[in-house]
Image 1: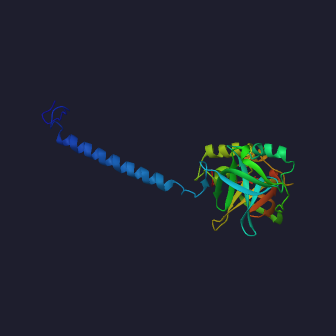
Image 2: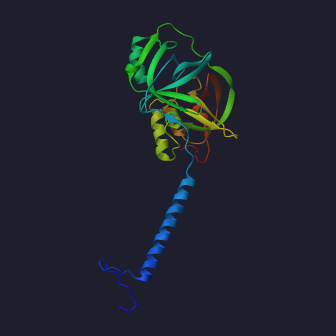
Length: 263
């Protein structure tokens, strides 16, 4: 050992040499700078959180007129002569149908009947959905048939956007990127949750379209290859209250070789 070499002995006070102290200080400073820089880069690279809400731990009872054209909804009155259509979903990655079988066994035709349903509300960007968790919490309020909403023709349009799973998109994605979230959307839609086309215009205003086949029937497994892929879709647009519907021929969907805005 050279005369000016430093040798640190932990149990001997003052054995930590001057050069060793300088090296440790430089290392700690560099590590802190790298940690701070990494944190800043990570935070600025993330998308801002959405204000979507999924009331998973609380249940809300809503009363409204049931209709299925072709997806289960409950029309509720939010003010005088003002109604909102709440899209009904099942628990997990399921449609609402398994949770409506009991009441449908008691009432042959639910369309136009007033129901009380208790479940978890999901809402974002003007759209509201309800997750049903228990068939016993779906009850008939009035046997008389009420007026159900009518789908009005808007026009034939060519729209650019992505097919998304409304349950995760409107509820738990804040946002959620990557293959895992796309795979989750595939599972949800294959389980019966209605597919939705999400579009955003040049002014960053979003609109949403419940997708059906060209005859207005539900689509699920047929549309799975297009979920989360930027696409151009031509179809007939109809409006029912606060929801748009898009009737399409799935074979005519054109996908774009661009990055997904949602997954």
